[in-house]
Length: 113
Length: 226
Image (cartoon, rainbow over all chains, first blue to last red):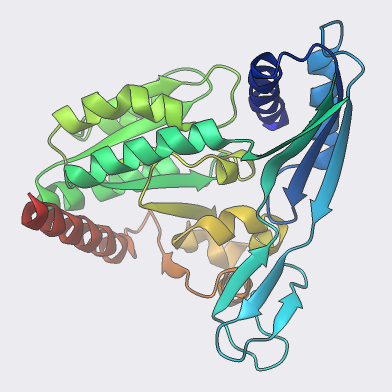
């Protein structure tokens, strides 16, 4: 259960940004979570909501975009979505795969006034 | 209403500290591995078995041990004449780059060529926290399932090597070493796989030789750049 640590890192960045932009009320937070990360979206949501309860940020909505794990075969160039995390090109059977998406653990944007 | 684009990694701060750790270690020619596993897979026993071989091959190596509580593992490892630093994480289920930054100067002072970081027993959280290591090593024991790579893909994907431990117990379990290898390689085709037993000593030499070669190569590179 490290989602609490991730929620606290997330809030640290948000608070810094709000202070810098002189914003008072946080409305929405958008994050991206890749399929390959070891982060459980609902656990992160729970930790986020618990962390902001009864604080200035209370009421803010966390919007999570799940990003599928996709890759590109180095040998034949086929782009594909991983099935069961298996690193294998479905077209040529190649094993040299560049990951395109699915490792994100990103704060994308915030809405605030 | 302001919509502010931030586009930042949530763990950017950890990543920055890990990057600084990595640069400091590489500059001093210290090869660092981050050893992860479930609780009870045998990380400490493995390090104990490796101690005499690594001391012989490298003159010096050091260990940082992360545990929720207590210093039992550190005491065991120190008994083999290896410098050990204990990090007690309290409630945290993993080490982070900050923990290692605190241990960095100690590790450099040991004048070591190889630093083994024994992470907290946990196969989920350490996958997200870069410590500044050169390689993550996952230990999987045959008392667990051979399907574990498929259930914890992040950690197997991040690792450079896999040690299948307690192979002396394999005849008494349903663990199929061949299947475990296939599952691990499906997730990570470039994974280096070793099979070890701390009871019989099997495979320990091979794994130590692999680490020693990595450490010596890094040291040569650091000496050239000096």
